[in-house]
Image (cartoon, rainbow, N blue to C red; front, side, top):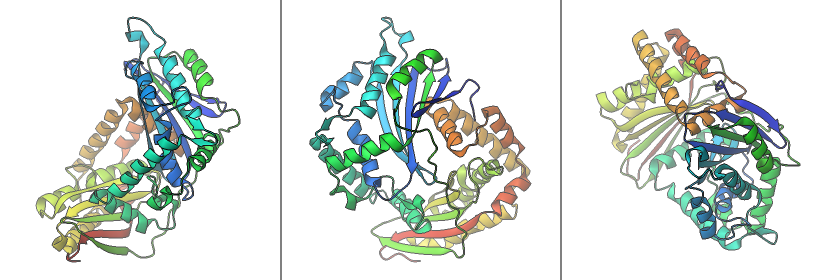
Length: 427
């Protein structure tokens, strides 16, 4: 979904994406590090962004580091780690006020990029490792985050569904890391992982806002260049397992509300010709309040506290989420599976297809109204090799027919049914 003015430049050790736009009063800079998902080092990778955002060699304590951002008119830095198919992506995001809108014309952007450079390339180091007190504090925080997933039963059920459905596939790995790894991580081992990431990950840098291309190129070359790193893509292509039999798993915990999560294989990924039909399928099936899951499972039969679906576009999965009373498991499961049968039989109208197309387009346009949303869409395209102007993408969505939706529905295969129920709940 290339924006008309997007400029992509191959730089030394990174790919630069410049997106000039007069729409925003701030400038957004996003650095994305990508590597194949691997069990080894995944907990270090989850910990690393939090350590990097606490201190640098030039700003060696947390208070001084934070005040350096406040002095730049409240410049904000954040990070997260996500799965894109079988790849692990860490994003560092910085939002900076555009100095053109300030009275004193301070070089805010350059100062912010200098700070960004320190965070990525000059973190606070003691000997051959990171600051030990920062590492210990962030290890405790990460451990709390990992253990808290069990308290959020919807997230926990989704994690367990992936554990079972994608067993022996990289996609099952937890991007938040594993509790059993934490105690063995030292400031030195984390620093070793950091140096490997900085050298070997594929780095994409996005800059969006009311900016001058030549000026941005000059600054990013100063602050993002990696001398000994390559722009060679390290993509780990997602596997598509052929489903031989449906796996049904029931697990018991102290819960009041059961979590019925179901995983399907779509065999369609971002960039495939029938990807647009999958978007419309999902909207009709469980993506919107007008969908079959919502109307039949929740509204008509009052069997679910919530019922919805979403698809993972780089792995080729369709996931159904529902919260049900433990005693209603069998009935709720039957009705959810019936909705898929109805989609495969074409039990929906042309009018519903048209309405869903408009909803999907509206959702896309809303995403593209936001600077980070634009970057995410462009990055999706970049890593799938399916770049397309936004108007062309909307045109492809508009071309989807009812027959296309029925065809994609019949490609989809049920893989795993996962039910998290109460200790005494039914099956």
